[in-house]
Image (cartoon, rainbow, N blue to C red):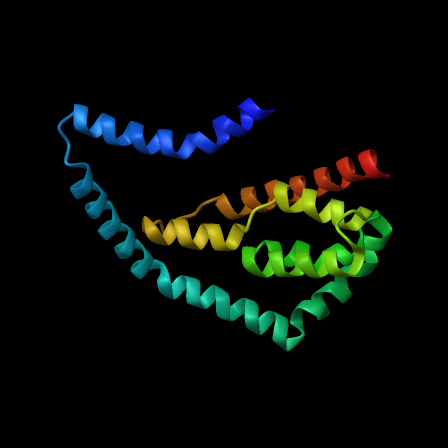
Length: 176
């Protein structure tokens, strides 16, 4: 175990030394390459900023307006019939849109039910099995200027549904 901890502690410094040594061996001005990459990063952030602001505003409006609660009340009877914990519905819906909002909901669930409860463990597994589809699509597609997404949204939603179902099945199998 100590060896794994040592390797873990040394991993980032070794990667940095490797990058510097590789650049030096190829006669690359590593500092100048870093500065150029940082400039490109700022340009990308500037280009996607309107999309990020729009997503953050929509999440705030969705939560503050009560629309999220209304959607949960509509879906709750079906979730009960399928054996899906109603407590996880807000997280399930918000996870599609915002990682930070879903993390906030996750922490609320931990505060209410505890991280070692079935619901706490289930939402932990679910967070690991799902993605913020709308956020990811908007940010990545905007940064490289993709306008025709074709089947990306449908595929991502199916993958998220598979992750949610898998998380529920695995959690029920392991923690009952």
